[in-house]
Length: 237
Image 1 (cartoon, rainbow, N blue to C red):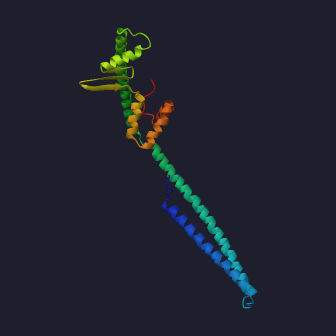
Image 2 (image 1 turned 90 degrees about the vertical axis):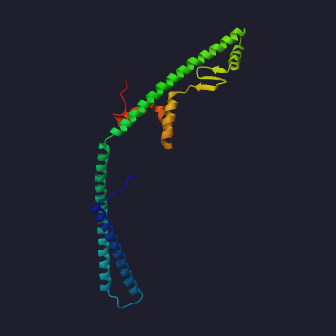
Image 3 (image 1 turned 120 degrees about the horizontal axis):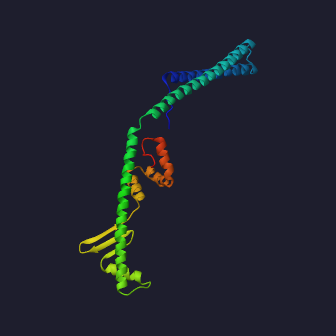
């Protein structure tokens, strides 16, 4: 939330106008009460109250009402002046924020983009190797099934059983081998999950939640970053 900052001059003028209005309203109230008191005294039979007394009190009350109205208008003008001064101050802050250098942020974004590209390349190469070895393992299982003379729908089960007997399993997403040396396995994973998981683990929860929505609008996200931080991302090839 923006802070409503007042300059010393406008703050003093606003406070003074508010105090003057308070005093004027108190005077207005007391003079009006004086008129009512005198009128009631006459009604109650007080012969010491003259018409001149009431007229003087009414004149004072009317004058106090005018002064109170003048004080209200001064306060309105003071509020307008204060808002204008605050608007000018905020405009200066806007210019300061807009002119602030973004070199550090742009460099950090470029580093993040470069790191993501590296992760994508490494993960893609790893997935390709898992798929290559997994296909070879699956093909070997088919060979074992064929060698046993099983060629019908039972072949898939026979292939898996033959591989299991040798401590192996594999397909285009996963490979596994176990034996005396221990159990070894590898599973493919999409690069976007690796990148999103890494970023989410390093940022605040709210930002991490936002990533789930941002990835559904990739073009929009990239365009937004390029608009806000023109030097942050490499141009589209």
